[in-house]
Length: 578
Image (tube, rainbow, N blue to C red; front, side, top):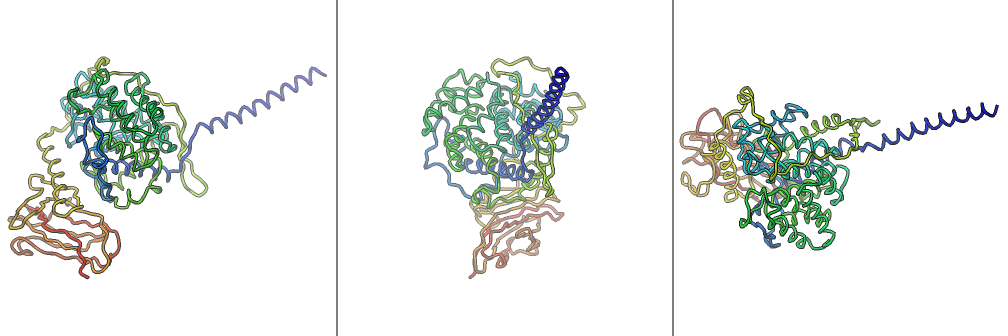
């Protein structure tokens, strides 16, 4: 009887143990997931893109003007809310090439297809991007397009400034960001140049769940091989920050001495001392981290410090701000960073407006969560939640640009090469310069006004004199279906405000002017010989209905099926008749 009782008790204990173990295992499984509401994900992802735009816009005037020098405090530009509208920046539109590839072909797109799409891009490229894309156009397929055997700039900053997309569509999924780096980062980079992008994407991935700058930096560092110089550089910045917690310039000097002046850490730099130019990924990543650690979560201070470190001083604050803005979320951003954002603005060389970009990133993030073993759960109120599996980052194998591994002998097939459309590099240059010149030209005629979708660059830009008028900006529609748009977010004064224009036309053509106020068409009129005097016309649009409001004004240089459809802009002013 005692033996039977003992057996029974053992059986009960085993059953109880199994029950407890099952419960413990269920709890353990539960603990392996982090959750974020889909609406909160979108809010943070949106902020991440705004952070990139803010950082590059604020730091833009300083880019590479201070090399191996700290930017003096008084030379730091002042923030203006309109600077957020950075739709012509390569810091943004290049990475959207990769997003487009993912949108069209899915998250499991081949590296070769990614290479074909990048080869077909039409914007100017420099350094690793330029060498990588030229290799692709010659038929050298990835990963060889970024290999040091064929690319003289493998450690340059290029993928580092383009990897934001990878983290923004990989919430809490660092390995997904690492994987995207292996697809897109190897198109142009190798070694530290690749690791810079995977480091950035890792910080973004963690920013959906963490806001402490040091923890974000450590999360990014886990995505990088610990034996790499890139890892060593970021670890040094963390160490020096602990030694000099209130003196970022002391840390900057230590970074400069080791990672700029010491040739052991510049063995694959595209330029070497005595040149003071340094576009190496690791030293510019160090400037990002200096801004984040010494900025202590303050958005302004983070951007200012990253900028003042010099070198690529628009890209670095863009990355730092993008990560911190993601952690904060759009709903918590100060108004000065988002109030003037033109969400219908289109990014140069892409099919994306800001609004469409949000939709595409959410769609890809949903796919990424499911691909990486997560779930999309639905609450009782109908809202959705991402259940993100917690997985330890798995960095790729160590590769060093100064001692690279063997080439893959990867070449595009004839069929693949047929998909790469031959490009006219001169035309690419003209298109980019024309767009920038036209945008810059408005600074002297109508400060704060910007353009998008401007075509025919040879006919566009600033003219000191044209058809009897001084200081004129010329624009031209991109094609018969796409207007060139001159736009601005404006505070309409109280009283009786009017938009006053002086516009003209080419001697052999005409064009259609469309004035849109807050997306409402206020005026549609022809500008040509029949509607002008001596080639010019004064137009006034009553804005009294919007007095005291902030609105978006758009002036469309629209095609009307003819030729020589250039618009001449001699005056764009908001004036109060009261």
